[in-house]
Image (cartoon, rainbow, N blue to C red):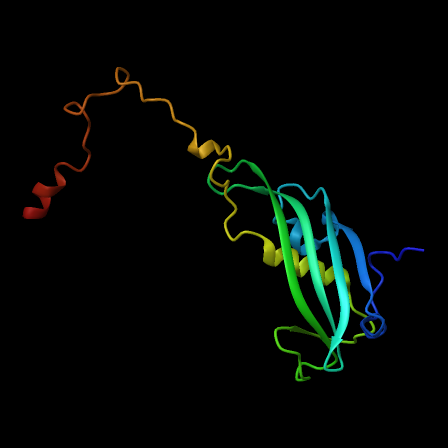
Length: 171
């Protein structure tokens, strides 16, 4: 029977058995991520390959999700694939020794909240400033219509509200 996504992982037993855990999570369930998305639809896929290094339970976490974001250049919708891979070490204390190139995850290694780790990785995978990439349709990059030259004043007729300011500052 498959486990529920919210059920905590026992990193000690899973690492001892070198188990690979795969789960899916709804993006709408991630409370810290949802306000950064244009629409919280879709799923996040997570895969964690458990193992151990130096007697410490470890996991290689891979996260992937398709997210709908707001382009900060044109304010239009844009779809991005969020991907992240990280090496984690599950330790009971902050000061516990951690294998090289692993990030320490302090807490009870028998009660690891995979959903929280996945949300953290998705937040880190978000672009700092979401913008359409080169070759993508961005409304800000569309050619703007040329201004109608006949509708407004010419350069000689243009009103200059601060033109007299120079004379006032001389006195």
